[in-house]
Length: 529
Image 1 (cartoon, rainbow, N blue to C red):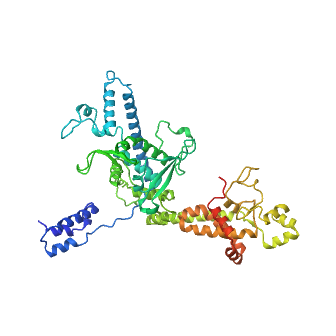
Image 2: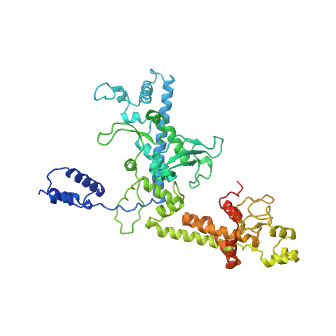
Image 3: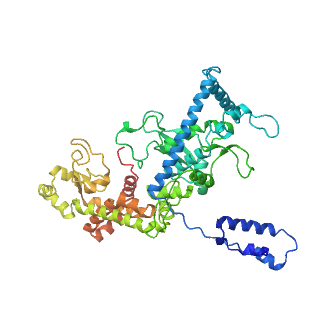
């Protein structure tokens, strides 16, 4: 039965397979039909109706096992690409230096000759004419795609690199695509932790779009073997963003020279778009390329169903760059190209499926730190009455607090100050070998047996307490709990012991110098490094 054309325009996109593509195709069809002259009013009204679009659900992050399967597949592809390109470059160098004899090894000689042509001209030798077919001797050695990717990255290789970089760094896809190959070696090749400083560009940040990122050799969240000898020396190391970045710089160097570009992501494409795009070198990849890469691998999703889940193989993972970044943010709990507040609000808490689980994790962390505060000894604090008594009988007050009279005097007059407390024995504490000066953070003084507090420390304690409370707004709840819940609880206990009136007086009378000291302390400017 023939259908009127308006039937096609009112067919709900949800009835189609590939609803999003169908919706876009319908919109393009409407725009084309509107150009026809002489349309009646009813048909024109149908054309002007809003095209129904299916609302996409928010992306779900990958679980840790899923992300491990994805990155393991990417590492396998990258290692294969590195071995392929390096071995072919070695063959090319041998051919150019005359180390391959045409009579004794004609196959290797022809192969070296072909690689030289590809390296110098960016293409295989071809017959003249319209079709420009590859010369027969080149075709006998293999397909054009194999020849071009012998010295250059292919689609699978470039996509694997991008997948691994985003999964390890958490950077935006657009930021990775615009990343340069040029970098600065901050370690100076001096034998310390290898570090590459790379200038990144995130256009969405407008005036703050440019920033320098440090790619360090070993990130803290990647476990290493217990014994360094267990690492296979013949394997390509891919255990850090630094290693992945440097390898991509190396393998893409010839393509960058041919394209006259400094972009990190460069690769050779056999063509596409129904013949619209000719074969050649390309910059950047998109989610379509990533999905093409994923389709070549067995990447099953986790079984999240119940006993009523239909039997059969699990569905394959839909690998996208945005989901990789979301997963990295949720698993690593560290911001990349955004603030901690953005990490908390836009990446961690927008995923309702994980919100309840995240709250339980934060609550457990808070309870753990509060338990530490309850089980550790409370800081000994001198009162105003102690100070008055010390003027008449310093020995008895000193004995009460486990000090001698000289130490007590130094404590009262601020000679032992470490910010929120005073240190009575900086070479006998638990955070350094006996007889060695303590190098621990002053934040640990709140639970150190060598620390004592006097009334003049109260303003510092109040200011630090307020600053830690303020930092809740700019950090993820879990990160704040792990870093500051213990000292915040200890300070809250000290302020409660001091009394509300004393706390308010200390807060209102704190001097500018005291505020500057606290600011330097919280910025870690007073720490020994």
